[in-house]
Amino acid sequence: MSITPQTWDTIVIGLGSAGTTAASTLASAGRRVLALEAQDRIGGRVWTVPFGDGIVEVGGEWIHGTENSSVYEIAMKNNITVLLQEPNFKIYKSDGSEMSVDLMRELVEYGLEQQEYPPEKPEAMGDFISRKLMDYIKEKHPDILRDQGFLTELFEQMNFFVNSLEASNNWNDVSTETTFVTLNGPQTMSWHRNGYKTFFELLLNTYDNGPGWPTLEIKLNKEVTQIKWPKDSTGKVEVVCKDGAVYTADNVIVTVSLGVLKERYTTLFSPPLPEEKVTAIDKLTIGVVGKTIFSFPERWFPDVNSFSFFWNAEDREEFKDDPWMIQMKQVGRPMGSNNTLTFWANGDVAKLIETLPETVVKSKLMLLLNKFMGKSMKIPEPTGMIRSTWYSNPFTRGCYSYDNLQLHDYPNARVILSEPMLDATGSPKVLFAGEASEPRRFATVNGASDSGRREALRLLPDIKFNSSVF
Image (cartoon, rainbow, N blue to C red; front, side, top):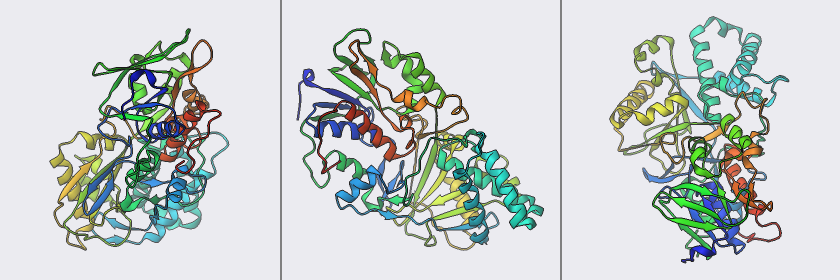
């Protein structure tokens, strides 16, 4: 449905989880909404792609927690099946042999559990877990202390797992102090062959050929370059796009990533952002998790959900010219297809992989796959490869935020980021949503969605919206 520009109540910038939730919440209440998305698709840092014999998730993969999860609830309300991806795994060593999982599972679980019992005085996560884990090893497995090669790889594995959870480059960049609250219930619920795209279809009321929302208009490939807002006056907000188009509305909800805000805040807003919001953007950190996904002619790998690669000390020398390869510690099995595998990377390694030639990435990662798993099974040549580019993508510039070591000095940064900018009468004109603005649920699709709903409800204080969808 086409709507004349003068009639917009709200413009939503960005159609990731936050923006799509905000736009749909407002439109379901009858508000006239224009949603502008710079990319050629809806979903933001969620991206479901047909691949292999099904689909894969290039971005967000799981629903983290089921109790009080708006994402899980919308699936249940609409009778969509989501499945638990069990954390079962095998470990392969760099000499091609298989390693018992029992000891590693015990040590890794103990190490990660320490995050739930942080020290009174905040410190770097890596230092804290290392100290706790060494004490545990001395008490429970003192024989390990004689195997320096094992200890070196164990702590690299722990660093990798923390970075994969946090999107950090190093576990010592992460603070033991956090405002994050983990939702109860399983943390790895998968949309499997339905794909995370289903969540967005449900929000937009387009699932199963639904009619959508009549007062919502979506424009893709619309990069916003400036937001002009009335700071010391009253009136409309004006949104300027790179192609020259200009749209006006009573207010605007900005849902771009923290990475994009960091890069563009000086030119994006006129008048400029207040000092305290600039400080919040500056002090918060967004990290990178990368995926390289291969498809194969058929499934050739064991029936577990992930494979860990454990380096022997003597095999490291072989890769001294490509140290990033030693940081490739985990391969996962997507639930949306049977014949695909995902190499996970994080931080600087994930950024590097985005820049390497595709042929190099393919040959190097297949070399690793054969080195660790090829001794016990025949590995076919891949039929396709997809790799994420969340850092180099100018419309994401990263994956999600984490609590860094500056949290203690700037504990309210996320709250300040979420605060709306008001006109002379105190009316909200520029509102902010996105995972980084959600103090208790940042870094998750659910948290991003909740932030979008939060800002929509700020504009709908007395209006009930369509609860059958939300």
